[in-house]
Amino acid sequence: MSVTTNETVNRSEESGPAPVEKPQRRGFFAAGQYIPYSLLLPAVVVLVGVLAYPLFSLINLSFKNVNRYAYLANPGLSKYIGFDGYTKILGDSQFWEVVLRSIYFTAELVILSMVLGMLIALLLNRVSNWVRVTIITVLMFVWAIPALVNGQVFRWLFTSNGGVVDYLAYLVTGDESWKHYDWFADPTVGLYVVGAAVIIWGALPFLVLGLYAALTQVPKELTEAAKLDGANAFQTFRHVTIPVIRPFLMISAALSFIWDFQVFTQIFTLRNTSPEPDYWTIGVYLYEKGVVASKYSDSAVISIAMILLMLAVLVYYIRQMLKIGANER
Image 1 (spheres, rainbow, N blue to C red):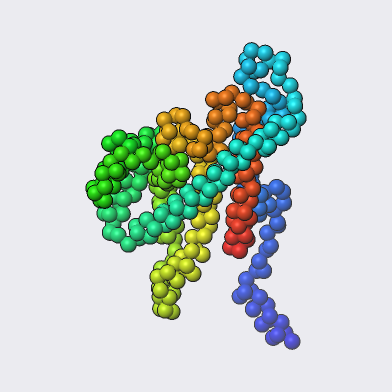
Image 2 (image 1 turned 90 degrees about the vertical axis):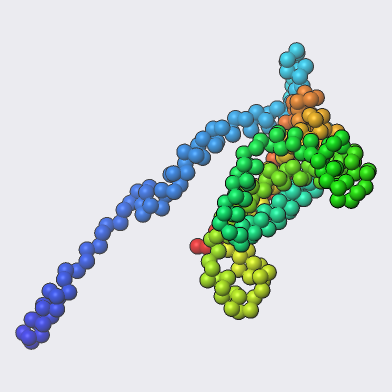
C-alpha cells in the first residue's frame, strides 16, 4: 500500500503542478469580442454627422415648393405641399423615360467594363514583367486624368470635322463619307457608343488593377489540380478562379453600378455643356432640373428617387456579400 502511494506521489511530482485556470475577463472588451466595433465607431459617428443633416434637409426640401424665385426674391411663397412634389415628378413621363435610359445605359457600362477589365487582367497574368509594368503605369496615368478632360478628348476624337476616329474609319474602309460622319447626330449612337466609350475608358484602370490583384490570390495548386483532372482553360476559370475572386467581383460590380448610374460629367462635356433631352441620364436630368431650371424641390424629389433606385439594386449585392461572408466562417 505504501509502495502504491509513493509511486502515485512520484508520478504527480513528475507531471508537475496542475495548470491554473485564468479567470475569464469580464466587461465590454471581454475576449476582444467588441474591439472591432469600437474601432469602427469613430468612422460611423463621422458618417452620421456628415450625412444626417444634408439628408434631412433634402427630405424636408422635397415636401416644399421651393424654386429660385421663392428662395431668393420672396421666401414667403415657400410652403409645405406634402407629397404633391412626388406626384408631379413620378407622374411625369419624361422622368420614367430618363430612368429607363439610365438603367439600360448603366447595364451596358457595367457589363462591358467588367468583361473588358477581366480580359485585360487575365492578359496581365500572361505577359512578361516589363510589359505588365508598362501597362499598369499607363493605366495609372489614365486613372489620374479628370473625367472632364476625358470628355473633352473624346469629343475631339469623335468630332465630325477632322476627327481622328472618322479619319481612321476612312483609312480602313476607303469610304469618303466617313470623313465627316457625325457620331452625335443620332443620340443612340452618341450616348451608347461614344458616351459608353469615354466612361468605360475612365473606369478600366480601377477594374483592371483590382481584378489583377484578385487573380494573384488564386492558389496555383487549385488551377494545376483542375488541369490534371482534365479541365480546359474556360472550365478552370469558371469553376476555380471565379469562386475564389467572387467577393471582389461583387464589390467591383456594385461600385461600377453606383458610379455609372449617376454619371454626369462625361455626357455634360461630350455635348459641350448643353446635353439634348435624348442624352439625359438621371444625373443629367437632376442637373437640368436643379441647376438650369432652378427647381430645387423637384431636384430634391429626383435625388431621393435616385437614391432609392440605387438602394433597391444594391440590396441584392449586399445580400450576396453577407452570404459569402457567412460561408467563409
